[in-house]
Image (cartoon, rainbow, N blue to C red; front, side):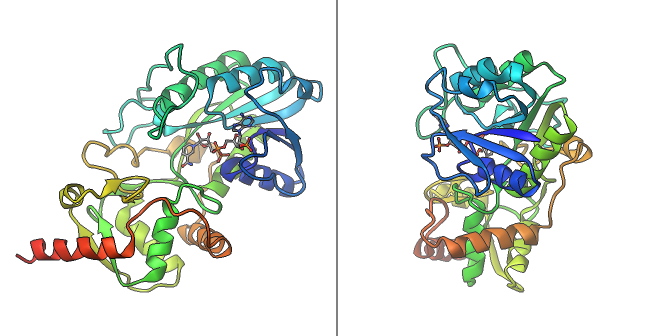
Length: 338
Ligand SMILES: NC(=O)c1ccc[n+]([C@@H]2O[C@H](COP(=O)([O-])OP(=O)(O)OC[C@H]3O[C@@H](n4cnc5c(N)ncnc54)[C@H](OP(=O)(O)O)[C@@H]3O)[C@@H](O)[C@H]2O)c1
């Protein structure tokens, strides 16, 4: 296939380009080159999508498939205007942040309500909390379906993406933490649900979708599992037997300013329950039936640990530092043993 990746300089776009090259496809990546470099074997076309005409010169080349990771509505609009008539199949990487209800577990694409599209004066996510991110993705989804038609468009609503080159330091926190050993603060309850997808599995599915002209809207995530299975699986993948986990109550953590999900003092893959019980507990059977395959957790751990080892300076953005974690554990034990 002749594939155009709008992106390709980091994480998912780069993994997709890399796999496409390995599979023998003719791969072009269009980006600024600010976030990183495209994989060896892919052609890099420098473009700035803030320029509405930036992708026009690529139209005459024609492509079997486009994969777009855009977050900005105007970027997607310009890309569709320039390329839609010259491309057979369009994959848009969306997000589970398009959903309006993060409380109800077990929802599928077919039954889950989505947010309204972004208001007219919003073009992309804003501020440190990425306000309007989900709404912008809803707007882009609608544009892709409208411009490409339902039979030539594949909308992949990704869940938390993990694995090598993950810039977010969410899954990597747990890999680093369990590798260090000692008493590990495990948030919430062992049976709480967590859900994510390996970047390499998502990349493989995007290429499968392009190759088979898969059309429609799907969640792109692995099956949910318990947090106990996640932490045990991460430990096992690192060769750590019998990790020393201390489960700390949600309300205790929140009252000690331990935060959810991502960022400073946040414990990744942990969200407040029951308010967010649906976020990492979606029913992804339709995606699995449509060709998404999920590698063993140990492979994801290995890929993440190898990448961390090769990039010791990778930014640490999430989790608790060791002294903070130890202090919270001491306070928790005092409360628990009272
Ligand atoms: N990470 C997660 O857990 C998660 C979860 C759900 C959904 N998602 C979605 O999954 C996708 C992840 O994509 P990704 O990992 O490839 O990275 P990304 O962080 O979305 O990267 C954006 C890509 O677009 C390019 N880009 C940004 N501004 C540009 C501009 N003005 N002109 C041209 N290119 C531009 C960047 O390259 P340059 O900077 O080099 O130009 C980069 O390659 C996104 O769609 C995201 O919304 C992510």
